Image (cartoon, rainbow, N blue to C red):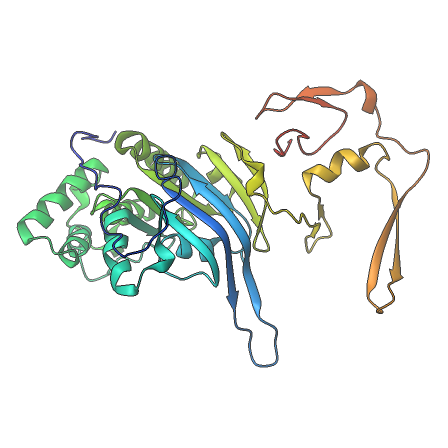
Length: 352
């Protein structure tokens, strides 16, 4: 159990540290973070095309909300996290905190913004191996200009809050994986951020420790009314969050949980083919093809420019077995689901 709570941990004011002039106000009261039409391009190696990591993403996080972004390696999760945290500028688009556009800020202005509003937790923990757990947290506070006495008191307070006070004098090499990640979370909380951005925070942990870390993040959110964004490849980890979005090839292709906003999904829904040959279809396509059954002929044709096209034709007379008799309810929006479907027609939630 954590000790302390909302009365013990003071929160930093929402607009402190943003700085800058001529910033755009946008939904100040409702959203802590809002990303609009965010693109990220990386220059390809010599002779190779540029890599588009993010493709026009729209994304919102409310104060105190626990959200996850789920996707495989290379889908753009870490790039999105860095852009939302002000560690990397988008190639195009805007990121707003409390309605203020941080993409307009200089690096000098971004430093106090990051210290005031954002805490970071990384997969490796990134602890300094030659410093104790306590010293790792103290150093973060010292960089923020706190006195030695104030920094030590705050660090000890966080060690107690996270249940590792008895291990605060140990070096990282003598801590378990779960303990190291708790120290990393303590360091992220040091400056009372309004949001924690966690990049695969359970990636190096076993199942039990991964669950413990996610339950801890849940407790912190409730106790401190702090928002948290977790990027992960694990759907089990995402099950601990209020809402999750699925990211593939730099686009959001699905959204599950509370307060769904299908408008955040890409307007140009694409079919994704995994290396094992599995197709991921846009939810709105499922009801259109549903009546034609499971068996399709696939042929390759060539357009006038010589580009190959896949043409799918349903095989007549093949219908989904028991389709007309099957009825269920969507676990997210409670809409009636008729027949065998993989996505809800109403909200786009994946049906498992």
